[in-house]
Image (cartoon, rainbow, N blue to C red; front, top):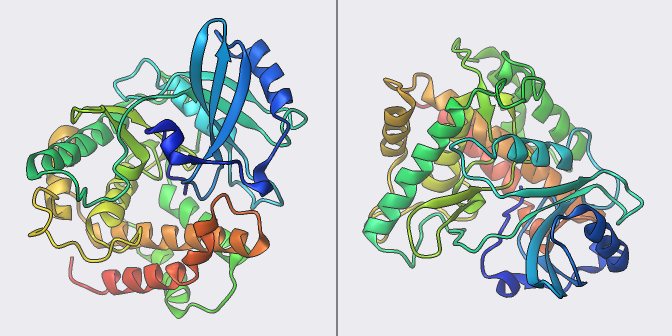
Length: 358
């Protein structure tokens, strides 16, 4: 659940953490061969955000001037099955390069563990703004409204991409998305479980039995939210969608619900209930859904509570995995240990959501 950030360069970075250190000279030699335009000596710093795949700022000083890149790699240690698939992140962003969806330029993917110990990829370093706090406290009403309108519009653009035409026909199994996802996140949760969470047990029984009939199939980002997109330094124009680790061929409404749950309902990310009197311009989830539907050509979304509850359940499982990696000592961020109650809190919200009227 990485909060990929390329903005602010050194201001957003720290020294590489002990658990994530690697041979910089080996990486430098690899870049000289594989990264177009790379020259000089390499300096590496680690972005302070990031819970899943460690992310680094690479700076090269050479005869061609100073250049910056971003590297994402798998974390060290024993990993859960189907997690941290660096190659999938790289592949989907490369496939979307000529689409209407803004993505960074991809330079290289390395799946040879002998270079730095794990697989990694290198992409363009962009200058822009990432609004990690979904309430955007330093923005005015107009900027908040415009950013969320752009968030809805660009999500609709992603869902309109013909995944087969861009070469992603084998990127996931079309259809039965929620059946497969619920099974996956139950398995991931069981693999990382550290305590009994009654609401998770209720959801594990409820969700498979209440999947809506709609079978839309699109590219699904999987972690689409304000903290995982970048805007122009001064304009409300989105310049990159980031953190594609959970992307697959899936159901578009899973993305819509996740975005609303994470950014607008105050049940994730440590935001808490949102006071829109203090942050005017932040839409309600109903307003965001209406904006998305306008761009996506939809009349509305039925069974909304299911989609929200699924998103909370899924994030509960993800959060439990991050917390377990923290206990095991190989998390990408020291913040992993603050997620001790995240799984239970999200599960409780999800269980309450499915019991309210649609």
